Image (cartoon, rainbow, N blue to C red; front, side, top):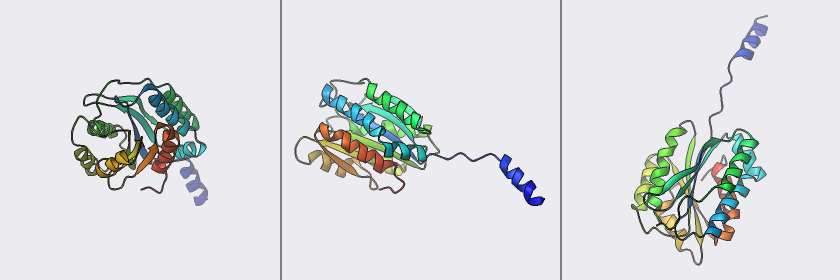
Length: 216
């Protein structure tokens, strides 16, 4: 009898909601070095990556949050798609559609990744329950404006935020080496895309690595 009463009480207890595993900010370089075709490769690549069944499954399992930030010069950073929690496959699909249709925020502007990082750090106050906080920085050039990138990277480390990178190369590994030395945090990683045409496959692999339970 006691067991039956206890079981009945347990059945009516509220179920604790699952906190999100990862809050991921996808930042997109739209500075002067990115032409319209390259911009569209980035948005279409992101949308296609989010429709990957493995990414959808992992996103929903972790109830992760996503947002997209476009950035270029010192005073040019904006949230293009606000924080969205991925509770169902429909949430991920809706986010992918918004990414594909996303209008370019800036044109003819400098490249200031430090300001993009500082801007992104302020956004995590909106998702305090996530176990991991990650900024995904992509770019095809080195800074020609703004603050010292290492200072922004150090601020992220102090805040417990991971920075990963996609270096889009036209030749050699100059951008990759810059990302390794100045952009990513000690627990982060950088992936290399050989030209913008490799960006879609690279962003898929990168997102999957960022939201996996085994990280780093």
